[in-house]
Length: 440
Image (cartoon, rainbow, N blue to C red; front, side, top):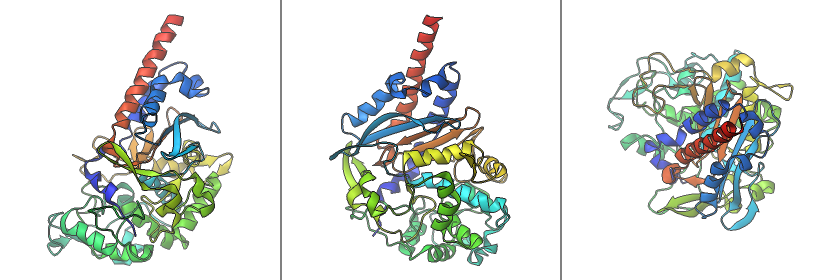
């Protein structure tokens, strides 16, 4: 049984996926002549406001953990600020090997897996999806995104791989769609990331479709919310790319990720299903109700210890800070890590660039004034995305900076951590500048 209630309020969560705090903080840090030196040493000691932010939430037991990582270029290990424990009920501290539900931070990984196949000529960036999955030929589009499913018009153009990568295909999402379309998504089991084995009062549980192939076929039978390549709308398109990858590669989706990304990147702690032998590293996930955390997915009894009915490329992964930092480090290395070739430089450059079709109107969207690449936000030299349980990750190619924030609570807007994180960084940097001026 999968329960997704705590991700349902995502409609108002533009802040959830906003990378501006990390990006702005990194840019401001680069302006300091001693920024890199500080990150190469004890980060918590040199970032008292950021460390205090972690203490504010962890020390008062509002959260079990708040763990941030920073790394420059190809430094082997990222440095950390904050900490906490795996659970409010357990004393085991979190570290770089602890396991976190990264939810939509899975999307850039699936996006780069897609870019590998595009680079190898097994997929085309502007190839119609129907050439790989024929069920997506002749799609219908709702006249009203919240209206009856019978009131549709034909799609004016085919869905393409580019559109799936950038949420511009017109597809809906179980956590975004409303009205009859959302009901149909629930009835058809078109869910993404999992939340809990436990039933949550007031929320009807959803039984996922039996496998990724069936999931894709059921999705093809429902109308689109919008005409393809006309509007940016957060969607299940990255989940669908998991099935596209299977057909194009001839491999199961999870096996492809392991063989082509996880193994060559040395990501030994990233899975759709956490092995029972590693359950002791898994954090608890909390639902925040009235400012009070309640465990909704305890690590020892987590739904992520079960095999997923549908391996969700858009929100199904569990990973560690060390693993995800290695993925970011591979991106900063333009496809190479520790001398190993993971993907081509061109695939990384294209995948982290703005791929939104020129016909798309971004007005009012989460990425207005910015762009979107292969599964993540693209803004200048910056690329990254966030997750529904409060996590964030980004790279800045100009600065050579990789940054992550790990925690576990839902919904992410329950606490203003992202705004507070940016303010804390600004306060610490102001102090650094003052000390630098006094020493001059």
